[in-house]
Amino acid sequence: MGVLVKNATLSVSISLTVLKLTGFWAPETLGPRQKTVYKVFTAVSFMFVLGTYLIIQVVDLFLIWGDIALMTGTAFLLFTNMAQAAKIVNILGRKKRIQAIVNDGDTVLSGVESGVEREIVKSCNLEMIVLQALYFSVTLITTIGWATSAEKHQLPLRAWYPYDTTRSPAFELTYIHQVGALLIAAYLNVAKDTLVAALIAQCRCRLRLLGLALRSLEDGLETGEKPLLSEEQEQIVAARLATCITHHQQALAAARELQQCFSEPTFAQFIVSLIIICATAFQMSMMQSENIVRLMSMGTYLLNMIFQVFIYCYQGNQLSVESTEIAGAAYEGPWYKCSVRMRRDLLIVMVRTRRALRLSAGGFTTLSLASFMSIIKASYSLFTLLQQVNEK
Image (tube, rainbow, N blue to C red; front, top):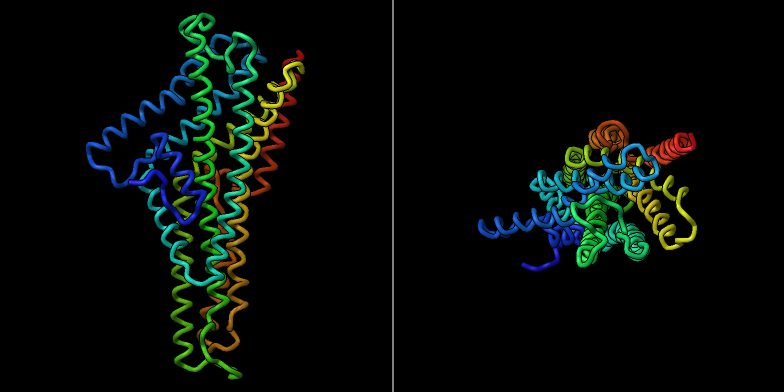
């Protein structure tokens, strides 16, 4: 059993490997005893990375209730951890269904044969790797900034502890736990978000491959200058069209599974991101400019939260665009050389594929660039309201 989880899409492979190493993606090859050990590892990992933080930050939030400045200082990371915990529970609870989506996409994309098909897969893969690398880079800058910007004899993040954290070695041990858990949780969050985005990108890739197949229905047939296909040639084209329809239905089924598996967690993430973007901007407006490192790390955290919403909305938006282009691909095929019956079949395909494929977050908002802008605008409105309340 290798460490790296293999997949046709590198970003999916990286995300699943991170989840596997942190205890949240059990390999399918584990035996009964190994599964028990892995579950124990999952519980320990969850408590180290998130469980402890959730408890101490909730207590801290109650202790400082009423102080807007301190509450936003605790809440922005608390809500991040709550959203991440919800996504982890979702992955663990729906692991088999998500694994089926991963295996299905891997089978399709690994089975491409022609050079043009491989270029399409490579292009989609490269786009997602760039997004993942950008997300990872911003996260790295943020976590390093937080870890190094703490004042002397103070922890990087405020929280309540049932012991005196100013004394040694309690301070050093708590500091190590905060920084270690923060780093792991941050990269785990990147892995979960980019996994969903990469699976949506795989659906997009499958639709692009389908468009290529529809344009290439006539490839390999010696049609010459004949105005119509021969009966034998039309049977070949009909068989290819049937395969295209099957692949389209499979891609739609994969998108429906993605919708059912990730719709609620994505909606929760959008709500949390809206609050965090507002709270982080408010914290930055209240910070002293002397601590430049802290201010910069908060700025990159704000960018991180915005980018987190963006990758969901961007991939969802592009999926809708790719789905509507299938009809155009069918029209670009050799329909004018087909019989009336075959033209009618192609027309049905074109009418069916003109309906855009849309993913939604909890059934309330679609994953689109318009939704992304709405979240940013709502965050700004909430930020303005917080400033007005604080001034009073």
